[in-house]
Image (cartoon, rainbow, N blue to C red; front, side):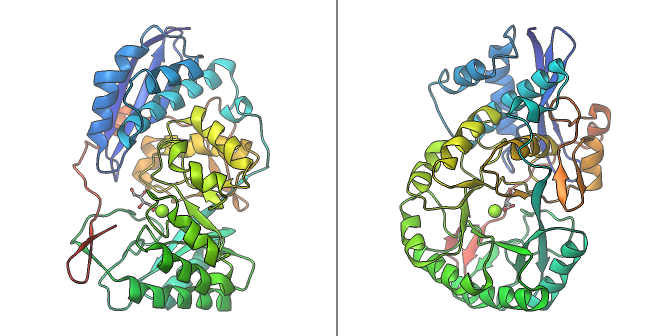
Length: 400
Ligand code: KDG
Ligand code: MG
């Protein structure tokens, strides 16, 4: 079998998505996601102008060699544009393999290690009472784990809080956001105290600080949250300085998750080998595809670090499908994020995965089980988009 052609599609059914389709001379094709929120066209160009010409004529079963060729062979390594583009190629090739062998992708990754994939949903509210009620809606739907984000008194809005509830854009650009760590640090523990009072100890609760704290502030938050035994505290600090996590770890037993923006294992090398984190958030699209993610999971397993793939709505259903096959097969799976996509998105990307009896299941279709309706997608042209920005109360630019 040979790769005959490949095309990149950009569409916006509710939000932007970039999809790669690789065609073979035997009529089988594969799909990959390379959506990079706010920088979509850069990845599309990297694929069209640089990677696709190198793929033609190659054997699509050679996932390892093709990955090495695109990564090592470029000389220029890493970076979200490069790695998202390589990820799309890798996802599409694994999809082709599954289709050619007529088997779901998980069978090529070691087979099922569990019956279903535990996921967490996103609950948000303008204040604590509203957030507590929203968490209840997910528990009623059968979720075993819920992420809770609440508005902070004195701040007009904050990360993860939207007027929309079940379906919302996690990175909606509006007026510039305003941030105050001191106000937030007073509020967050009260939210989790209220949640434990209402729902008891069984439900897993998660929280995302979205890169806004310093290590010592994160240590304080982790300590204050200990009585409410979170499943994880995510992205408490920006993680360019991996050593910063030593400081957090010294002070708290709250489990730590990080890595949704990491693009190779080198972003997490120290975090893993020093056991400074509990969950690694890298997912298939950002981490360069299934080929490297399998290796990273095996490496993390040696250091008691579990997986916790990013699954916000800016990752397309193709990434979700591929991630679920990965999740169900790796032995050190922890949890999978699951923000439901809008109806238009699901219609453009019909998929085999489904939520049933509290778990998400990848389905039994050959490959990753996600399709792309090109005709329908053409009705939703690309719309330029940027992620939000954040400033402190005095106007200083801060991390969003
Ligand atoms: O594009 C950015 C989003 O994917 C991100 O803000 C969502 O932090 C996020 C999460 O945990 O889902
Ligand atoms: Mg996050």
